[in-house]
Image (cartoon, rainbow, N blue to C red):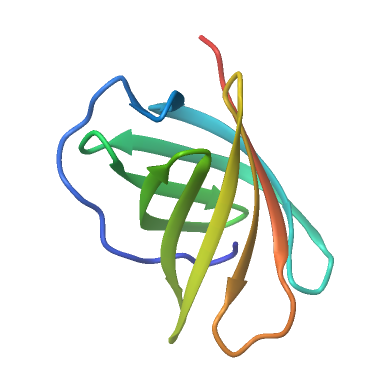
Amino acid sequence: MKRLIAVAVLAALPAFPVFGQTVEAGTYDVRGTNLDGSKYQGTARIKLTSETTCSIEWKTGSTSSTGICMLYENAFAASYILGKDVGLVVYEVKGNGVLEGVWTVSGEDGSGTETLRLRRQ
């Protein structure tokens, strides 16, 4: 996701469980494909802001952007703005710090893919 901009929420917690799934706060390695199939990589930082919401910041290539995210069962979603368009990414929580997802931007055909892997310190 080249340029993501959206609203972030409040303070941080170490991890938030919902229905047995968790997403941990921290830095994630990002690997994905754009709508045209080209590949990208970078990092994402998740900061938990309540029991079910978080802020997320991606750094891919020369782009930094932020979004708002939430967890529901094994779905983890984030919204963002790409230029003048609204975007959405939906991840499946795989466990062990791995999130696998797809993303799109309003008005565009197709979807990109993205995998986040938590960096263990």
